[in-house]
Image (cartoon, rainbow, N blue to C red):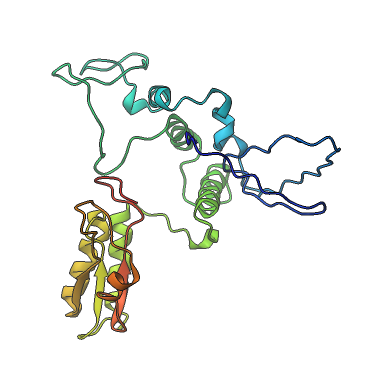
Amino acid sequence: VGSKAQPVAAEMPAGSALLFDDRILHRGGGNASSNRRDVAFMSYRKASYRPSAYYEATRSLRTYNHRAMSESVRSEFPGLSSPRGPSGGGASGVGARTGSSGLPQVFADGASGSQVHASVVEAMVEQLRCGTANIGGAYETSRRAGLAVVNVRGAMADFLNCAPDEIVIGASMSVLTYHVARALRSSGRLVPGSNVVLDPISHGSNVWPWVQLAKACDVEVRWLPVVATGECLLDTRPEALAAVIDEQTRLVAAGAASNGVGSI
C-alpha cells in the first residue's frame, strides 16, 4: 500500500490453483487477452471470522490517501479525539486532544496500556454491561463471558497463526512474563554455566523478568547485537548471532518490535 513499485503479475497456466490470505490487500488483474478466462472463486473462513474486523470493511484502496489517513484514523480512537481542553465532558469531538497548556497532546507510548480503537471500547463496555460473570456457570452472563474468552483466543490465534489453546490471557505482558520466568526458575533448566540472551531494544517487560531469573539461577546474561550504523536495529546476521548464542543458551527473548522507536 502506497508503494510506487509495479505490481507482480504471475502468469499461471490453465488449471492452476491460486491460494491467498483474504485478510491482506490484493487485486486481481484484468483479462488483457482476447480469450475468455473462466475463474472459480472459493473462499474458506474459520467459524470465528468476522468480516467487519478486516481492512476492506472500513477502507478501500480506491480512496486510499496515505497522508490523509492519519487524521481519518485519529477520529476512530477516543483517546486521540476527545473533547478539546483539559476538562473534557460532553460528546466526543474530532481533533487533537489538548492539555492544560492548550497544546496538542501526543501519545507516543501509553504506559500500562495503549490508546485503543473505538470498537475495542464498545466491546469492553458491552461485556461489562451484559457479560461480567465467572466462567463455567450455567447461566447467561457466564456463557457470554466464556464465549468472549473463546472468541478472543480464536481471533488472536488467527492473527498469530497458532492454535487457540496456545493463547494465554493475563493482566499484562509483565505479569505473564514473570509467571513464565518463575516457572523456569523451578524447572531445573537454568544452571550455572548456561546463559540467557536478551534483546536490548525490547520492552522492559521482556527484559527485567529474565535478568532477575538469571540472577536467581546464577546464569550469564548476554545481549543480542545491534547494527554498527547507529540505528536502533538488531544485527541478525548469522555470524553476529553466533557470537552470543551457543549450545549453553537456554533462552532467547527478542521482541517483535521496539515500543520506543518502532524498530522491527
